[in-house]
Length: 145
Length: 71
Image (cartoon, rainbow over all chains, first blue to last red; front, side, top):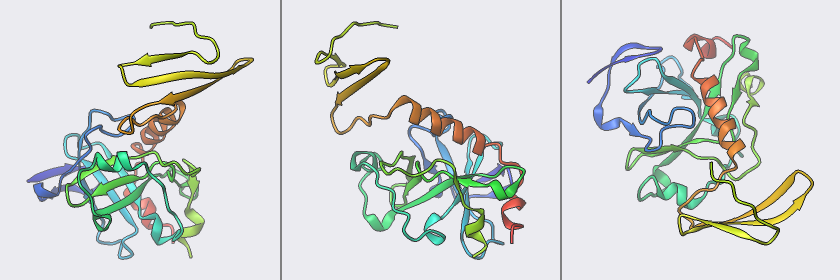
């Protein structure tokens, strides 16, 4: 299907790849369907986007934190993972939502509540981890390494 | 909103399966214990609100190009 996106204009998406957030995201509880996108220019596969399928103006920038912080290891309650359907740990991926202000050096990642995706069921959820991670973790200096 | 008065050590039951116990009261701080089935995530309201606020801010990110021009 064709989809209008916030950052990439009109694109063709594979409907079977649509992710379902059954509870939406905190603050966007009614928005349940997203598609994961990546910019081809990002050859490091560091940045991703989740674009709402139902609201073209809604998209979140994500980062694959493990690429810049290998010891990032959010603990999430097993019951919350179970909400994503049967899972095999190889099917689970997690990304962190970025806030990119006008002063880009101030960009932060939300390490406290990663987006967890079960690639087998295409169910996803933003889960509040039980670690003491920062909700506004500055990452700009880590990107230059 | 339902308002209930409880003393230290007393509890309330919500929806037959969630018990909230008043563990201690110290000035304006109340420590609560929550006994809930594993399937019900218990988050402090302020943590959930913090994530809500962060997501709303993240949804305002304007330019995709910004994150690729920081080298």
